[in-house]
Image (cartoon, rainbow, N blue to C red; front, side, top):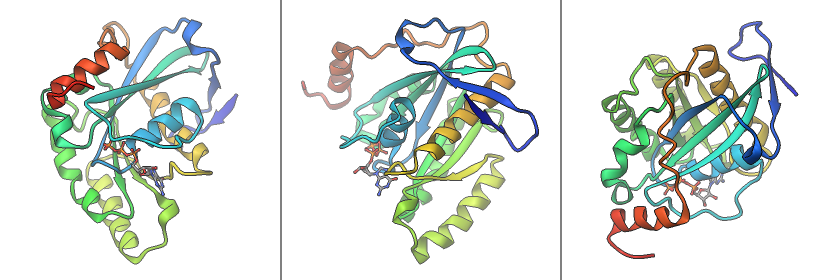
Length: 230
Ligand SMILES: Nc1nc2c(ncn2[C@@H]2O[C@H](COP(=O)(O)OP(=O)(O)OP(=O)(O)O)[C@@H](O)[C@H]2O)c(=O)[nH]1
């Protein structure tokens, strides 16, 4: 097990990895949406957290994709479901409400080497707010691709990112979904799950996880979003 010192308090939470997640029962599901511009690394980060590996190659997300992992937090099995949403407008369209429905938390991602992806954050924050994921919802800001540092631009943007996170009352983390950054990525999402558990999220109402993306459904989603068959 991993001893995780949650949010800087002295509460020690026991987090254990559950193997063969598919056959295990779990008591609740946390739905976390991951948003940000196209190419910032949302797919890479969610893949990294859920599989413990780096994706060798990623493709632009069409519509929505989700990955999950079961964690044992203080003896309770919890399914952490990461909804990786398309950063490109043309692949989002009418899917938007589905991403956000019944979500417990939002993770905002920008690319530290791409100022434009940072400048887009207010738009993502606003989209979340309009879909009921406002200041009361646990939110996290991630500056991804720190392996591309150092760069002067990145440093000044980092200050602004810290400020933005503070204004919106969310933790700010730097990480990389490329080689060697796995523990950090793991810790960021695990800490968020621990926070959600502490807040008693996911009790009662079931997450609309019936929105299972089977392969057939993915084709349908692709068709809805692009108008073309895969
Ligand atoms: N150097 C570096 N490259 C990264 C990192 N994370 C992702 N990438 C690369 O950035 C590109 C885009 O990554 P994705 O994970 O597909 O980005 P995305 O945010 O899911 O993009 P959309 O699906 O279009 O919204 C890929 O070539 C990744 O290999 C990182 O931490 N460092």
